[in-house]
Image 1 (tube, one colour):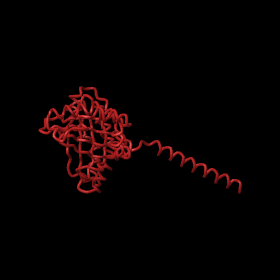
Image 2 (cartoon, rainbow, N blue to C red):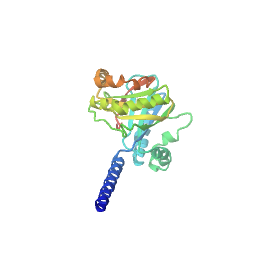
Image 3 (cartoon, rainbow, N blue to C red):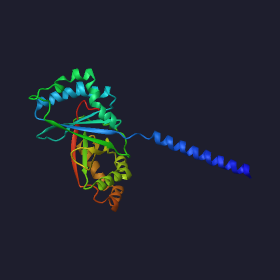
Image 4 (cartoon, one colour):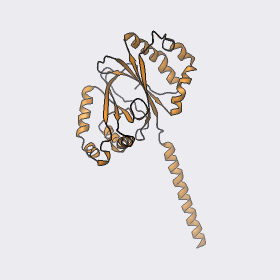
Length: 263
């Protein structure tokens, strides 16, 4: 009887060990959540636009890649705006990589040489009017950026960037929970080509989240949102009382990728 008891205890210990190992492997295999920087440049004229794009193509993007950064997205408004804008989406593997990037670029001789016009511009002749910077952490439900496989011409593609502000931090977290627990699955099923979803950690509008979807053209974009609004699963999810009033307003930006955008 004693021998059987020892055998039983050994089996329990072995099963417990196997469970811990399996759980550890599953946890380590899960993708780490990325961080994203969205830079929005404001430009006053075509001269600044040309100079900024030369800097991006010849200096900034190549240097980011040498620093271990993956694909970088560069976008422009799909609609005519009085103030010329350029959006740059940069994925980071960690917040430490984001913090270190400025120093890394400063030490990159190829970057400092190729980017002289931007880096050493005179105060009276800068390459931009100013720029905004937003830092985000990816959602647990979409921990890494996914570059879409669109086939239309870049000038026709629509990348839709949305910013959702909430009235309180608690309601903001609730909206992220709604994404992680159903909304992202609906986007996937309906073919929204979601690029990223990020909780804003530092930016001008808080509390807020941002996400980007992508389409072959404007007509396809409109059709997808029509299908989303009519989707029974979305209607059921959005009707749940626990998700009521979880965002205050949405800012919508329709963008085209530049010819050299990698996303």
